[in-house]
View 1 (cartoon, rainbow, N blue to C red):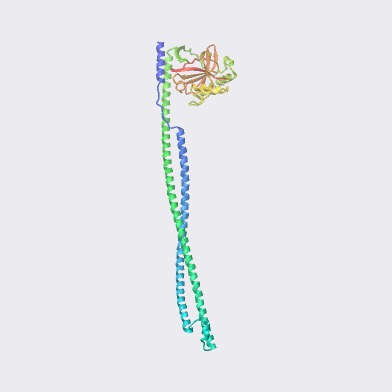
View 2: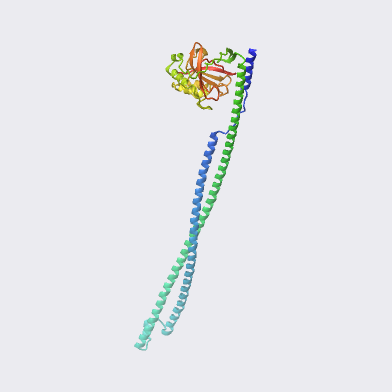
Length: 427
C-alpha cells in the first residue's frame, strides 16, 4: 500500500509538472524603442522639411513683391518711354522745319546777292551805304543760319541721348524681367520638390507608426497570454501541492531524487510543534566553527526570520533573492544566472549531503532542465548542523507569502524530476 502511494505521488507529480504551456511570441521593448527612435528621427526631418518649405515660400513672396515693384516700374517706364518718343517726334519735326528754313535762306542769299562772298557784296554795291546795308543783311542772314545750325545740332544730339536712354531703360527692364521670371520658376520647382520630400517623410512616418502600433499590440497580447500562462502554471502547482500533501498525509515515507539523479526513500520526520520557531534565532553552536564571513551570513539570515517581503520576479521575498541578500552580509558574491549557472559563475562548488555545514546553500533544480525557472525550484540556506540534524532558513514558504522562517529539523525533499544540490561558496 505504501509503495503504491509513493508511486502514485511520483506519477501524479510528474504528470502535473510535465504540463507544457505554449510559448508566446512577443515584440520586445527594444523593437518598440527602435520604432520610437525612427519615428522621432522622421519627425525631426519633417520639421526640417517644413522649415525649408517655409523659407522657400518666404523667398517666393519676396520675389513676388519684386515682380510687383518691377511691374510698377514698368508702367512708369512705359509712360516715360511714350513721353520720350513724343519729345523725339517733336524734335524731329523741328529739325525738319529748320532744314526747310535753312534751305530757303540759302536760296534767298543766292537770289539777293548772287553769292555769299562779302567781297562780292562790296564790289557789287552801288555806294558805300549800299555796301554796308548789304553786308549787314548778309551778316544777319549768316548769323541766323549759324543759329539754326547750332540749334539743329543740339536737337539732334538730344534726340540721340534720349533714344539711348530709352533703349538702356528698356534693356534693364527686359533683363530684370527675365531674371525674376527665371528665379520664380526655380523657386516653384524647388517648392514642388520640397513638398514631395515632405509628403514622403510623412508617409514613411505613418508606416513606422503603424509598425509601432503592431508591435505594441503584439506585446500587449503576449503579456496577457503570459499572465494567463502564469495563472495556469500557478493553478497546476497548487493542484500538485495539494495532491502531494494529500498523499503524504497517508504515508510516513517518501521518495526523493538525490544529486546524482537516483531515487531513494527517506523516512518522513516526525511532526513537531517546535520544528518552526522564528522567535529562537540564536546562532547554532556549529555555526561558530565556520569562517567569519559564513558566520555573518548565518547571523543575517537568522535575524531576518519572521519578516515578510514582496514576492514576484526579482522581489526581496523570493527564496533565491533572499539567499543572495544573506550572502552579501558576509561579502560573498552570488552572480546572476540560472538555478545552476549562477552558482558556477560565483565560484561555488558542489558537495555531498554528508559534508554539509553552516553557510552552504541547497538548491532544488530540475533534472532535465537545470537552468529552467520551473515550478519546484527552491533555495534554502544551511545555518546549523548538529548530530545529523540540519537547521535551515528559507524565504517564501509557503509560496507567495514572502515569509522568512527557520526549520530546525530539515531534510531535502525536492519534487518529482528535481534534485537537491548542495553548493559551497568561497569565503
